[in-house]
Length: 170
Figure 1 (cartoon, rainbow, N blue to C red):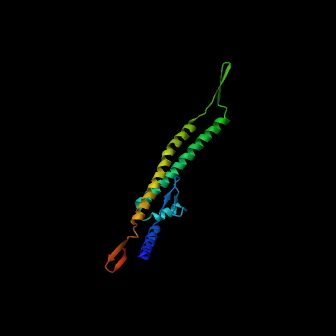
Figure 2: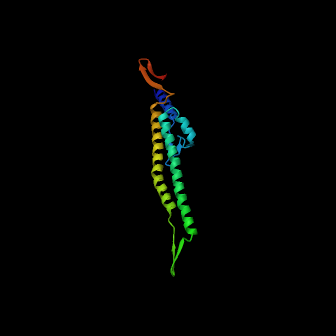
Figure 3: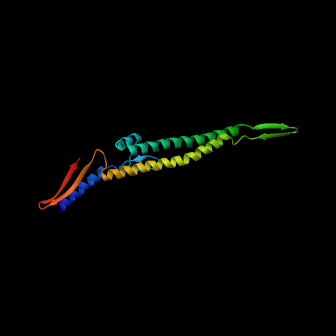
């Protein structure tokens, strides 16, 4: 009896370990069950059977790209404006016997850069939530056995002659 229970528990552990669990990190990287990073192409290959999850993952990756462009572009515009402001003397106006110098810093580049930074923050927050939702949904579906290619069913059968397992592949 103990030997049978041990074999059954080992069999169920093997089935559970076969379902691949994914883990999402805050920067959008996805790790497999062995904590190895999975490339975006490999993730797309895993999600190819579920078009909704694949579309959500692709939208999340697009948001990450847009957020990075806005973040780096905003910081770049502000840095360019600082360099320009530091290297120019400004406008000098001579009126009568007084000389006035106007600084042109901060200019429109700084304000455009700040606006890009302000837009980048919610975009970058949104992409990580979208990718985490995709990973959670994939893990939920893989543990329940909703994979399109693997519709198997395992039943425990008992009768007067003993206990058995029935594996049905659809």
